[in-house]
Amino acid sequence: MQYSDNYSTFRVYTSLFQNMKIRIQGQSIRFRLNKTDIANFEKYGSITQFIQIGPDPSEILYYSLSLTENSEYEIHYLRNKIELTIPKNICLDWFKSELVGFDHYLTINSELKLYLLIEKDFQCLVPRPNENEVDNFINPLSNNNC
Image (cartoon, rainbow, N blue to C red):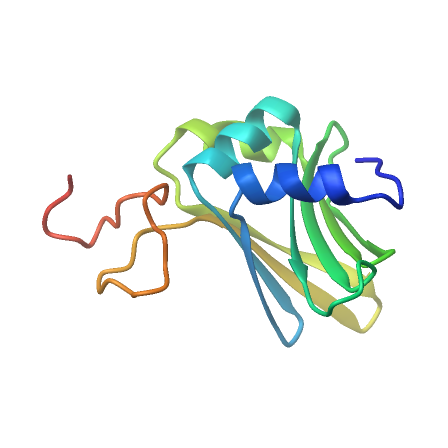
């Protein structure tokens, strides 16, 4: 996805329509997508979210998933943006199925691998006061399944 140095319109779009989360721990990155995220990812072929880390407009970390016709995963970090490119054929079944997610070990160099996990974001079993889970998937472990 191309974007200019003026991120204001881009930021408004991502903050209004998407809620993708990331978790970074050691040599792993986990992406969680709610229903709207997955619908937009399928429709547009990419999805981006951001976090404003400091007061300056340049202090934003963007994270993005994009589909590719290629058969290989790729990840890049450039201009405050983590972009993971995923083979389209891997996501096609996931978009519409009950499959929770998929993972991949990406070789960084001969001694280093990065673990990637892409999954649907489920509602918590115990409500959290600061979490908006309206658009999350119903947790299969919940009793009400409504």
